[in-house]
Image (tube, rainbow, N blue to C red; front, side, top):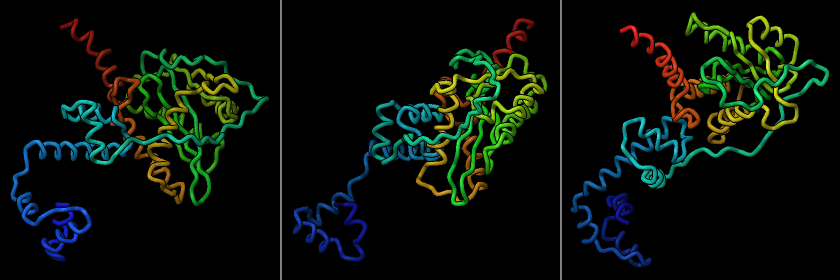
Length: 310
C-alpha cells in the first residue's frame, strides 16, 4: 500500500488515497504512511536489495537460462558468497527462473540403408576421453523461420564439451556437416600448431549426410576415424542430442521469438556458441566453461616437466 500511495501522491493526494483504500478494507492512516517514509531503511533490507540486483545481473548475463543450481555456481564464480537456498529465495523475489526444455521432437535424420557405415567405436563411452581431440561428436537440427526451414550443424569435443565447428544452411545436404567438420579442424590448427588428428574419432548417427562418400572422404583426408552409433538406438549419439537440446532451449526457442531469416538464426547461433564456449558453466566438467577446462588441461600437461627441470 505504501508503494501505491508513493506512486500517486501528486495526482490524488495522500489523504484521499488513504480514505479510498480504507473504504475498501485496506485501512491505512496518513500518519502511518508518513511515519513509514520517515523510518530509515535497515541495512538488512539494503543488503537484500543489492543481492537481488546481483542475481538479476548474473541471470541476464547468462541468457536468462540458469536455474537455482547453475545460478549458485555462477554467483560464486563472480565472487558472491551466497548459499544455494539463498539463491533460490533471491530468484523468487526477483521473479526469475531457469529455462525449461521442450518436449517437441522432429526427426531430421534420413538414413541410407544401402550405405556402408562406420563401426560404433564409442558405444556410449562419453566419459572415456581423457584429453581434448580424442572424441568429437556431431549432429544437426532444424530451425523454423518465416522464410522456411534452415539447419544447424554442430561438432563438439566430448572431453571439454567445446563446440568446435558449426554451420547454418538452408538445406541439409552433405555440405552442411562437412563445413562444420572443416571449421572444427581449422579452429584446432589455428589455436595450436602441434594439433594432430592421430587417435581422433568422429562419432555421429547414421544419417545419410554422415554415411555419404563425400563426408567419408573428408574424414579419410583429415586422418580421422569415423564412428556411427547403432541404428534405432535413442542413445547412440546422446551427448550431441543434449548439446543441440541446449541450443534449442537457450537460444532458438527462448522468449517465444519468431525468426525471420537464416541470417538472423546464424547470428544468434554464433552469439550463443561464443557464450557456451567461454562463459557457460557445465556441470559435467565441474561447472567450468569449455575453453577454460581445455586451458586447465594444457596447464597441467605442459607445466609438469618445467617444474621437474627447475
